[in-house]
Amino acid sequence: MKAKLSLAMGVALLAGCVQMPPAPSINANGAIKWANGITEDMHISASGSTLTFASPQSLFNPGGITIFSRIDSARNGVCEHYYSEQAVKTRMNICDSGEVTLLVEGQVINVGSLARFVY
Image (cartoon, rainbow, N blue to C red; front, side, top):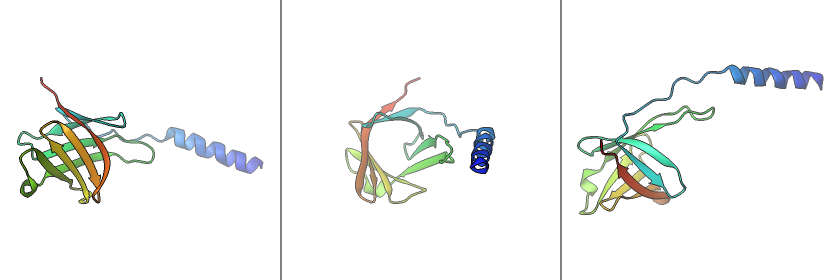
């Protein structure tokens, strides 16, 4: 029992000393406020062809950059369609009204609204 307690304390001390590398940063010029209350900052390229998100780091998520690229052949008059370069089956639809829909393998995962920052 004493050995298990010592082992648990040692692991806890080591975990407390682990330093995460700095999270990636982007020059955000827009954000999506999701229906679940989470707001994600993003960088919208000048042409609107890519959307770049910085994923926050945690103990279980290494973080990093996620890029969505526009699918020009899928354009229609009111909505633009994007795919994730890291996970091709992850899509995002953004309509002129600002409505955003996130889909994974055709299933709606989240909906939200787009805001562009004006400087």
